Image 1 (cartoon, rainbow, N blue to C red):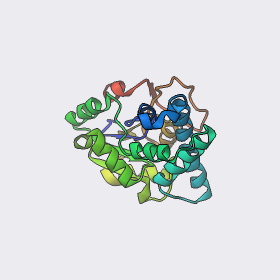
Image 2: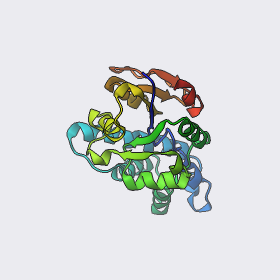
Image 3: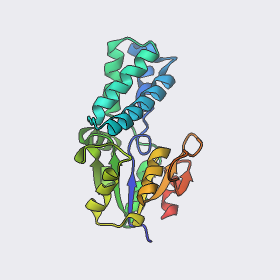
Image 4: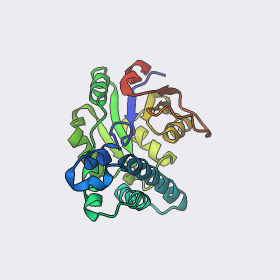
Length: 225
């Protein structure tokens, strides 16, 4: 089946989720992050995702901004950072995450080939719109799809259903791209073609499905279509 639609996860795939902690650590008012920002970034992201899975299983949905704050609070406490100003600055920067350097060019290439492009993310609409605007990639996207429209987090099938509903495409005409191995696996199990952007060189998750492609960054994506 020919790929007609390329859909991207947002956080960690198009947008660098470590950038907020790194940027804050370089500012004079937040020297408490100087030695711990990598751990803060790691723990923040891990808890953000963990809480999304637990809420999905429990049927207790909230928007991703709440998870983002909850995950940060856990990470700050775990790393003994207590300055409320640092917390506020980290949350502020999360609304301005930069895209990975190759992302705009890859999206532009796909659009030039007539491929439908979109984001499909756990993020809330306001968060996603802010990130897309800040990274200046909106002109390369046909849509930004948020799980808030279905009230459950990935990897629920109800989330992946949104792509077909929006673009009128069959499952195997979609290439779904994510930096989360579990997300790429979930989308593969759903029926999408999938690419896992494995920037860290991590092992493949042992799940009910596996990504069709594993790449180290986004530059190889056009070659897969």
